[in-house]
Length: 260
Image (cartoon, rainbow, N blue to C red; front, top):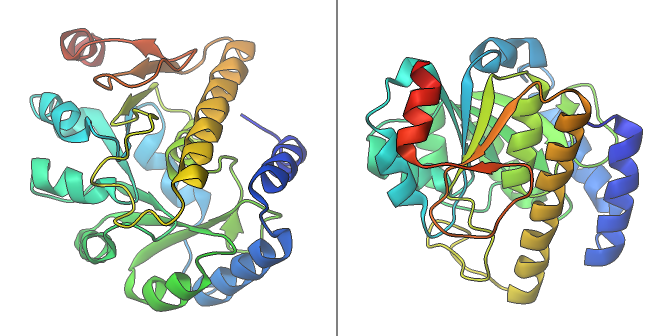
C-alpha cells in the first residue's frame, strides 16, 4: 500500500516522536539479515498463504479471547490467521493449535512463539534498535522465518510498512492481496491486554505507540480506498476504539461474508 519512500518519510516522523535511533534500527536489521541469510523466506513463499483469502489479524488487546471464540465455528481453510506477538498465546489457548503466521518483534510470550514455529507457523520477525538481544537469542530457535525492518531493507529483511506488530501485520497482509482483512483483539485503548508485553516499562510510550498504530491503520484504509477498495476491511474487535476505514461487523455478519 505504501512505497518505500512514502514509508521512510513516515518512519522519520515516528522516530522523532518516540526518540528512536535509526542507526540502531539499521544495526538490528543487519544482525537479523546475517542470521537468516541462508534460510530466510522470500515474499513469494508467503504469498500463497494469503492471496485471495480472508486474513484475520489477531491483536493482543483485552477482547482477544472473546473475539477468537466467535471464529471457532468457521472452517479453518477459509481463513489465514496472523497473530501479533503475544496474541499467539491467546490463539493457542482458544484454538489449541498454532496460527499460520506470527508477526513479532519478540517481546511477548516467546516460549509459545518458538513452540508454534516448530509446529508450522511462519515467524515474520521485525528488527529494531531495542530487540537485538532477542533477535540473537530467539531467531536461531525459529524454523520458518522472514525478516522485516522499519528502515531500508536488506537482502533477506524486507520493509512492507507498519510500525507496531498490529498495524505492520495489516500492511504485510495487504501486500499479498487477501480478499479481506479483519481485525480482532485490536482495541487500541489505554487498557493493556494480558497477552501484550508481559511487563510494560514505559506506559506513556505504549499509549503513544497505540495512537501511531491507529494512525497507520487508518492510512492503510485510505490507501485501500484510493486503489478502489480492492481489499475488504473489517473490525471484529469487541469494544475498543473506532478505526476509520475498517467496518464494524459482528460474527454473524462475518460468517455470511466468508461463506458468500
